[in-house]
Image (cartoon, rainbow, N blue to C red; front, top):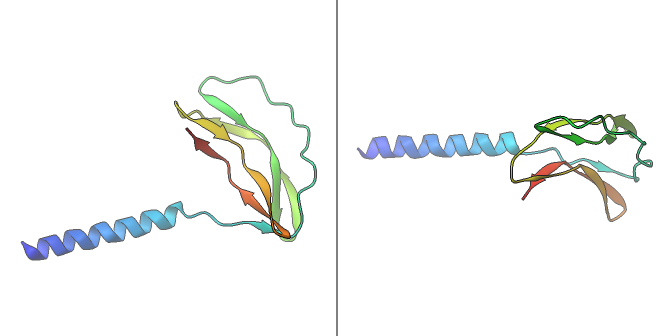
Length: 100
């Protein structure tokens, strides 16, 4: 019985570690702020989805535009679009996420 408990504990710990690694997100830091956002008119509303506007991505030392896309709605939550935030002399990407 003790061996079974130890095995179950080991499996639980292993699954928790792999789940937390899967949820980890890459931290993106840029040495300068993004250009002004592009004017990107949202498409007509779509049932069950919310429009996530386009934004600037920082890759390989420069910004490139990522167009907007649809996010499936989560009932009881509101969508917070991703955005760049100043952090000291640099800028950090805050990914879009659902909030209550």
